[in-house]
Image 1: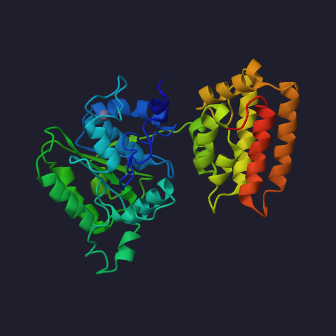
Image 2 (image 1 turned 60 degrees about the horizontal axis):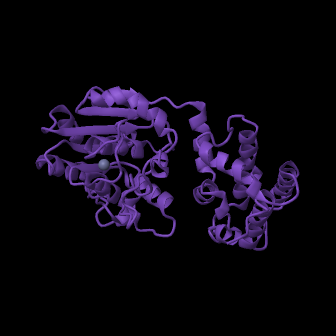
Image 3 (image 1 turned 90 degrees about the vertical axis):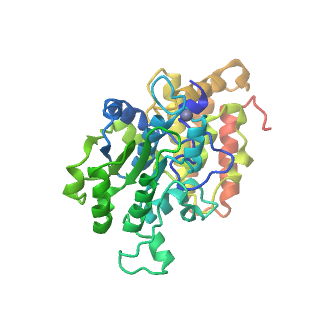
Length: 375
Ligand SMILES: [Zn+2]
C-alpha cells in the first residue's frame, strides 16, 4: 500500500474550498476504514435517499463525501474506494465536481476551512463544492448580513434552492449525481421542507446522501424517506480521534511518520503555530516514544495503532547498526523519556516556544538517532 493510499487521499477533499496544487489527495481518517466496511452493502443498495448517522467531531461529512467520490471515481480501487487521481477525484478534491454538491451549514463549512488551513481565512467564501452560504432570505431576514449568514449553524433554504437548481439539470458526465447534505439535525425547518420534494421524487440519477450526528432534531418526514445506516466506532478509532484533537498532532504527526532520518529539529520547531500548545506537542512525543518502545518489544501500539509502519521504521533506525553512538539504545531511550517528562513540566510558560521545542526535538534526534547528522 502506498503512502498516499495509507493516508487515503489528502487534504482538501471534503473541504469547501479549493486546495491549490494538492488536488490529488483526499483526507482519509483512520476510523474511516471501519466505517467503510460497514457502508459497503449500504452503498451498493443504491438508495436514492440515504442517511448516515455517526458521532460528532469525527468528520462524518468528509466520510459521506468520500462515499460519493467512490461512486463517481473513474477508476475505483479494488476495495471500491476512490482512486484520488482521476479527473473526477481531482474535481472533488478541488470542490469543483459538476455532478457533486456538498451542502453544510456555514458554521460547519467555516470550521472545516479553519481546520484544514490555519493560514488562510477564505474557506467560507468558496462555494464551489458546497452550495453553502445560501441566500438565507427566509431564515430571519438576514438581508445583506453576510457575516451572520456565514456563521449560521443551520442549513438554510437558499442552499436547498441552489441544490434544486443543480438537481434539475442533467448529469454532466452521464452518471449519477450526488448531493451530500449535513449535518441534517441542524436543518432550518423551511430548508427541510424544501428538501422533502427531492427526497420523495428524486430526479433520475440523483442520489441524496445525508448525514447527522444524532437523530434528535432530524425531521421525521426526512427520516422516513431515507435508508439509514448508523456507523459504529470502535475504541481504537475513538482513541485515534482523541489524538487528532491534540492540537499538535496536525503538524507534528506528519513529521513523526516520515522517515526518521528526516528529523530536523529547527524545521520542526519552525512549524509551531502561535496557538499550538507546547504541552500538546511534548505529550504527543511521549506517546509516540511509548509506542516506539512497545513496537520494539513486539507489542501492539497503544496510541498510534494505525502507524505501525512508521513506528517500525523508528525502531529499525533507533536500534539498527546505522543508528550510531556507543550508548546502548535502552539507556538512550530512558534518558530521553526522563528529559521529556521534565520538558512536559516546564512547557506551560516558555519564554520562546520555538527555541524550547527546538531543544526538545534536538534531544529526540541526538538520543534516538545519534548516528544521524542533522541535515
Ligand atoms: Zn478516482
